[in-house]
Image (cartoon, rainbow, N blue to C red; front, side):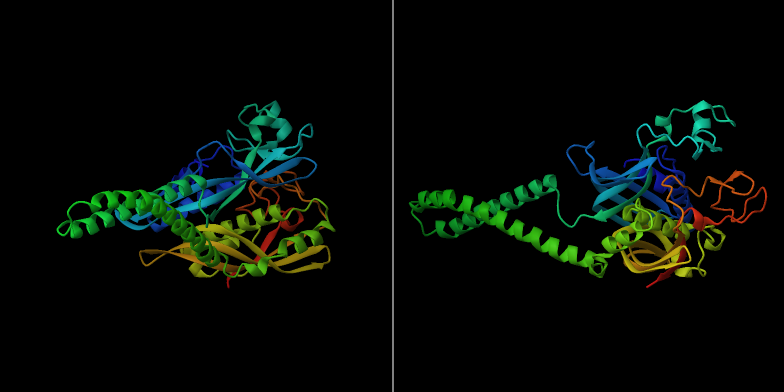
Length: 406
């Protein structure tokens, strides 16, 4: 997780990230530079065990297995321009990352892969024998596992470390308040007292201090409950309509190909959306088939998946599947030298051929032309640069056919 901050703010490479994710991070960093923004971005662990990582879900096909890992993180973001600070926050979150690995004893030797050293496209078998361009040899363990996507959700609760600290301060604060109030009352009474009630005051404190500590515990517990309801409701506003979308969509798609995973679809959908938003011209993208995007989207400087993708409709026509969704994102905009946060919903539609199985290792940065066999980067090329063949991305991957503000 620590590598994400420098990758976002400085454009540094993450050696264990796949090519599509690396490309998105490069695009976002370019957006910062084009806007003239200086960015500090840091992910840090909120757990006592900094190496602990949980597992949320997993899926696999015949060659690859994917696991969604989760960790309690904090995210510090600071945006400045010309030395003036424009925006700063510190989000407590759960960060999710999808990690793809090779299934044991089932190496996909003929799959194409970008050489981690020089970037040339070769098969995995060739890279293990030696890259034909730079000669570097790799073991399969050097190429996998890799991170294919990530997102963060705001933590509406509080973790155990923060909870214990907050509870301790609340109880101590209540005791200190009781002690100070007692001292003040005693000071007012001192002029009329012969000193005999000092013992009574001490005995009262012995009784009152534990009661006040319990009162602090009670009020802090109420605070946590209210925070969970208020913040959680604000974040979930509009998302309740997505309940059941996953089960219905996944059940329908698995009738077409049993290995379908809603997590994979969500990961792919958010990746396509981010690439379309951060690119300079979405019409140059191979996977984008829709109308020109709203100019307002070019003011987006940070785009974080909000944890919900509602499926409105699914249609199957002549071997193609068309899916219309509501995509929830937390969005940072930069406009008129101001940065502001919006919790936004987008209309996003996707299409894909359903008569070809999903390849979990597919990447638009390493496509092999079905006409001449040459490998090329299809993110910037709709046609093969060697033979001119128009590559049909729908045969291998989902395409984004609509993306608008709702």
